[in-house]
Image 1: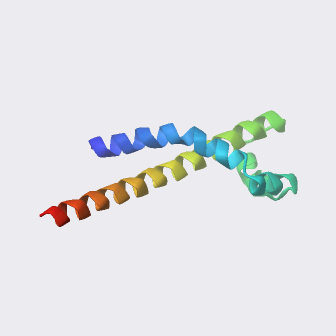
Image 2 (image 1 turned 60 degrees about the horizontal axis):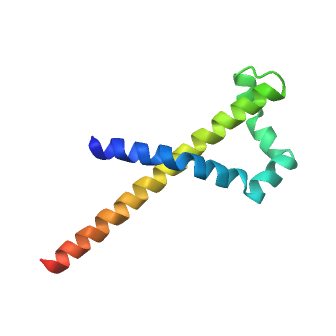
Length: 95
């Protein structure tokens, strides 16, 4: 349980840097500029009854933060597995 909580907290800490990285990605910016990004999020806007740019912006930010958290959590789990595996290799070489 302690490892899951630690992984969750680490993912929360990494969420903002991942969000900023996604936001500064030229591919993502071009995707929204040409309209495809907005088209993809349109069903979510309709589902949440978003009104105007403020409603769309809030939903978009929430969705991107959620995606950033999920990416961060996967990164933390992968890093944890790599560290565990490295420790296991070191301990088997000594033993």
